[in-house]
Image 1: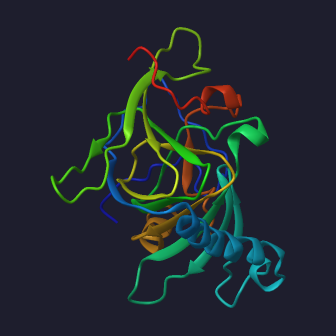
Image 2 (image 1 turned 135 degrees about the vertical axis):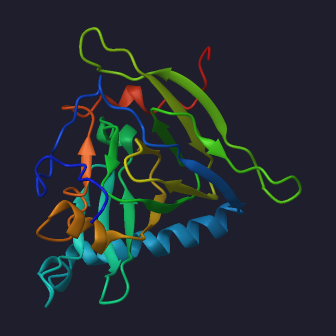
Amino acid sequence: MTESRIKNHADDENEIHDLAEFRDAGHNVVTPVARFAPEVAGIVVDAFTQIVRTAKAARAANTPDAEGIVRAQTFEEGDVYLLETPFEGFFADRYLMDFYDAAERGICSRMHLHTGLRFVRMMTGPDTHIRVGALSPFIVTDIPGVTPFRPALFTDDLPDTPPGVHRTRYNLIVPPCSFVDMQIPRGVSHQFNAVGPNAVIDSVHPEESLEILREGMAGYKMMAQTVFLARELPDAATCTDLVPGDS
């Protein structure tokens, strides 16, 4: 593999890198896709979340398959189901994630990056937003006459940084009853936090089998494919405010 590894310890599920030294390898690109009536959005989001919840309770999804893959997993942002796995000649796979409600849980997910690129579709139902954060500005697709809306953007200070370290956090709000796509390059920071009970992500990992090989990982675990930029999960108050501040 020509690209260098990102991780220091391939299978570490809580690897933490120095926030002060970290710089994004690029920018996340966000594309608003559609808005729906609440009853429509609710049905769609419920259908996807039910798949994840069914898998979480299913013995088969929690047991390694013939390839050693466990499909039901847990991530900081929610419960996960590996819907489609890679195979020879096809490097990509697909996950569904049923978001935790950050306000209800009392904590936020940490800022992090992944060992490979990601292509995610964020889907919200009624009474639910997703607050997306990053350490570099978002690029938002806006095609006049086609793009259905422009999400709110604002900045704040990244919370809980080490003494003497200041980092600006760039924030984007996914509104209720909407689909919003995000293209996440390898090594680019981000965090997702749902504010409300009805949110799901449909996430394609286009090069997952390649990144497993590149990093020298033992298997397909989303937590192992992640590098965190903080030791502790922040308090919910730091990610559930949906109103832009003075930025």
